[in-house]
Picture 1 (tube, rainbow, N blue to C red):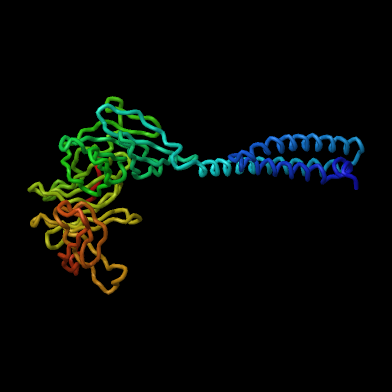
Picture 2: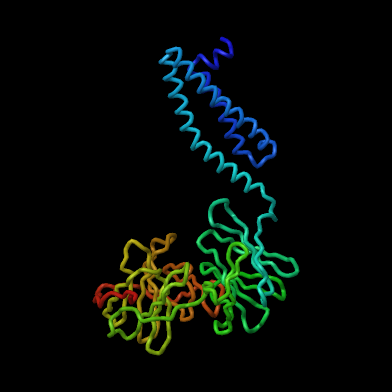
Amino acid sequence: MTFKRFCLDTFYGPPLLWALSAGAVLAGLALYTFTVARILLLAVALLLLLCTVLGIVSFIRSLLAKAWLRATLQLVLGLILVILSLPCAMHALIVGIFIDFDRQPPESGWVVSDAVPGLPFTVEYKPAHPFLAEHYRRVVFPSGKHLDIRMNPGGHPYLSVYAFDAPGHLFCLSDGADPPIIVDAAAETVVCKNGAFGFPVASRRFLGAFGPGPIFIPPNHRAPDLLAEAPWQRADCPETLPFAIEYRPPRPYSVAAWRVVFSTGETVPLFISDGVSYGIYQLASGDYYLKGEDEKRFSYRYRIRPADRAMDLYGGPSSDDTESKPAWLEIPPDIVSIIDSSPNGIFCECKSSPEAIVTDVATPVGDTLDSLRRLGTITPRN
């Protein structure tokens, strides 16, 4: 069989040549970041155009020769190849974009923010993904020193900036989701702080917010103040309780906060996420029992002891100690967050001790939950 007959007088010749040239074009699209591939891409694109013309000529030739079966097969194969080539071309382009993105030098792609008057550093962003809104971030000082900070995994694009009145060389960055970042402009260092980071809120001044790209939004242009807290408000709960349960709406990218307030003004936080309502019960001892109403979500359970101005956390058997019985674990008065709990104590973080500590003040649950009198449901006020 001659090459001419293969190209013009067979049902498989033109589609096969078109498929080979299209495959070469797809490979060129996937590897376009390389110079040689871009040069070859132009050549194979012209070849694909010639194969397309050849397929049309071959189809017309089959019709004129009244070779109906051959013409039908050529048409069907051609349509199948064209339809399949469209998603393949899209995937090849995506692969090419990822290859080009991964080949960028480490120092390329950083978008420098404009200098901000009175701020002795700036924040630069660099895309961490070719499509998604994810960015690497770093703090850059006037000396040229730059220090990486937590990347933005998407959904938290802005960094609010705060200055402390004393000492004047300390600043704070927050994206509203992770613990704040303390920037020491004098020492040119950055430190991530968990929990309370040792500076009174009253000394904090909001300066504005950095965003992806050369963006700095001043406060008078609606910059997001991501550390601003809404005022506490009393939750919708029975007025007869000898304590109050207060609710604070969430900041952007965070969950709501809850706390129990005793008549003396002392407070204990509740560790339950936003959107959960609570059932409140009275125990036979005169104390109170608080539990989340949504059984599909995890929530802590509490015993509230107004006379002692104290609260206990229900500690079930731990995963490695199934023989243990549940216990009421006393919550430290200055607790910030709970890391873990077991019948033997609470692994937590307190204001007086930034490191995780364990409280082992525990009493058996026993029959304290046998006689519960439901008092109502506690929900945020609308």
